[in-house]
Length: 119
Length: 116
Image (cartoon, rainbow over all chains, first blue to last red; front, side, top):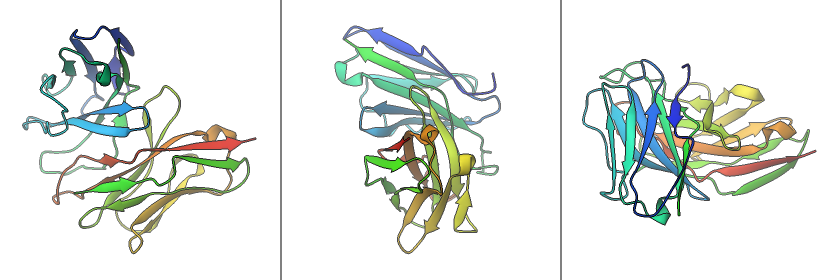
């Protein structure tokens, strides 16, 4: 598709279960970001992938959170043993940038998010 | 470390009146600055950015923003508000290439409500 695609759009799960959220970035975009949006909290950075470089995981809130990006395209965010405080909208974004920083226009293109509710 | 502040949780304005949504930032060096808009149950949509050059930048839907280096501000403006402008607005800041992280930091967001 033309834009960033995220699935599922809504996920309701029980406390303690694992969930996987998927992001399909814009074709050709080398950079991929995950953010979390909680009510009244703005956007919280989680993880950043750029090409084949090691991801920047500095925003992951605990070791229950992990993410991978296969083949430099699709990314999956996994939350293990979900807690009620994990309830939020998880946003994925992509942008284009060459390995040396060239082609960097700065703006991110966001998907519509995956709303996670942990009961 | 970079940071951005949006001092108003909510801005109310009457349709047809000018609007301003405030943003101040803190970053070392020359910043990349952005505004995004989020409509209900949607992702964020890019509005405009400042990277270099003219301090007044124009973006989508008639919005503009002015970069003020001395005041470290990047306020979003529109001369005449529309009801359809009602949404959540986010300011974001990022280091320039080669000076730090490529990860933008976002403000908490400002809810703009335009009354008919």
